[in-house]
Image (cartoon, rainbow, N blue to C red; front, top):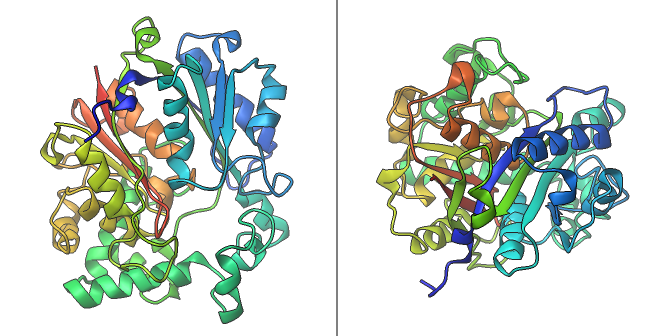
Length: 396
């Protein structure tokens, strides 16, 4: 471990979230402003206190639905005067804005960084059902570094890629469809008590099994739900955070490592970048997996949640199937509640920051009907394949 772990100097002081809709009648900018103003007020700050701004992936492709608002646009909209701003597609996936913002604070560039993530894919899909297809990503948003090698072979959706992860997990470890189903079923139960969630109707095992096969073995309910939403997080220097109205939630450790080629298919299909991120995160703290009271884990596809459980040592490698079997361990009243807001499978694809927002609500005891038992330590993780980042959060 390095002599100085920079993230320990940074805390989360405020959170905000716009409406989550499928689709929203509000513009991407309106959603972003709503979330950011809420977060700033929640931190007990004024706009003039914000001296840094970050998001992921930033301003690109003229504001397409995957990133309709970037830091430059939001700075102008809110009239912010910042010492640092950042955004870019590279990095450890959807949590990159928080990781970069924490580095900016720890290096002395700023005191309070506003981090946000906005997505309007539901609106885009109204006019073009292929708006989020990988074939549309060979230019613009992702340049052409990766997707140019996949789309000529009809890999038109991320589900085609992640299905290989699920199939390999089934093959290597004996994971079953009934075990995989527990990720979706747990998400739906939690979404039922989240007033913002997209899907709130009850779902049974039969409903899951009878849903359409998207890319074997992934069914429709294994895939996240496109929506329009914005989430914002305020990061503050630790000494500034002591004066905030909310108890500071300290960033105890970060995982952002990638120790393999950036590829979706030429990596370990039962690990990806998640294991690299998890190993790095635990190397930067004296806390242990047994200290974690709740986990908000990426469920862009249900198999990724199971991989993150293993990557973060919340269960042994290859045993996530038996760990989630029956759904009891991961339920809100279980020993390790996961995705307590319904995740992206039922709550809506808020794409990364939604997990941090939920973790903070739970740590502060502000989650309403879905509030779980009091705890001090939570973990969040986002990304799949070669993109992966994790945060260990501690309420002081």
